[in-house]
Image (tube, rainbow, N blue to C red; front, side, top):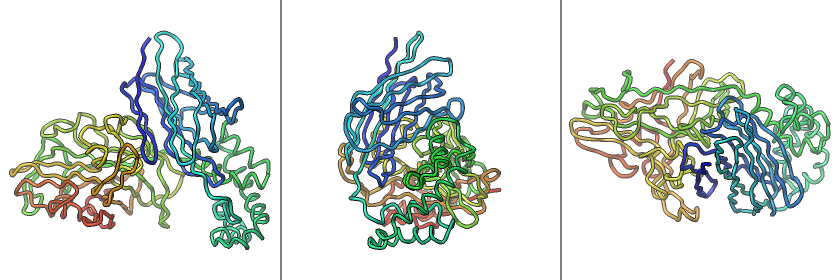
Length: 497
């Protein structure tokens, strides 16, 4: 019988499960959006490198009563199973999980009682024991956070509840505007009417939207049934949540290809390139890795649609991806042989003409202990530690004068990592928006020649996110060196068709 020991750590805005063995089955729950009715949204993903999990049944109990239950299946072989739950703050909760492996084994376990307290993060450990010899044990970590909102007002929820159906009728539009205007007296006078109008429209929309993706059980089925039941108040209360859930089920696969170049030449380890920098110098690659998050596709009208990134070890997790262009050959000695030149995820069907993303690690994940973080956050050489956080971009090149490069990360950081109170005066997360991009055929180019175009490579120079050596590459990345704000005027990334 083998036991796998898994450690965990808390963040200011979320939590991660970190594994000391590749055989671990792990469960991760980031802090979700806070719901206006006083419930917290908890999302979790269950996956394993040792046992292929194909489905999971979950039960949430409070004291002796079952609060909710459901089941979910892996969207594809080996993919993580993701579930979103809404739980009110309170005490005496327990989570019971039963997962089914591809070889027919049942892996089950139940947590100790835990509380969901307003403004706090709770860690819950679940040991999943898989039947049949040899027994394999893993631990799962669940975190949840609930923030109690102020007492409900007459306008609360009208804006959000009527947003999705604005355009269905003149009255629905009036109710949408009324909710956002915040006139309590006017909202109180028309609240019942608006709930009935917008709720009825939500029911109609859900009955149609959720029909094709209803698997016959679980949350999608419940949303489909909610729409057909026609209860305007119930649809108003859960309509936005169900529309998001069913819309995500309609989502189509997205693959965004990246390529590293020096001007027009493909960039690779073990090669040299002339004419880079000011004055022109000959360079060779030593390292090129970059974190990205908040990936979006852009429509012709300018609307940005989020791409939900897959959980794809070791390069994608928790909405963050690591692009890795080095392969540990030639002068590339900082990383390893594995490379990653694409982002994979899903988005609603649509006609997309652009792509956008942010270079960096989200602030909610940025100040964790990298020694305990799972991939890609545990990548070697991509962190300065708890306080300063991750190196969002690590670009190192060799020249006749020595090594030059940029390690981009947040700067001016202070606080206590253990208390989750770190703040950084300069975020240093450039936002990249690229037009005329077709996801199915085009590639995003990361041009090292452009990154160092205005850098003096005739002497060793290193930019560590502050100081004079950073002025030129920051400008190329579209960052204000003094404030750390994104200017939008980057020239390092471009599109090729």
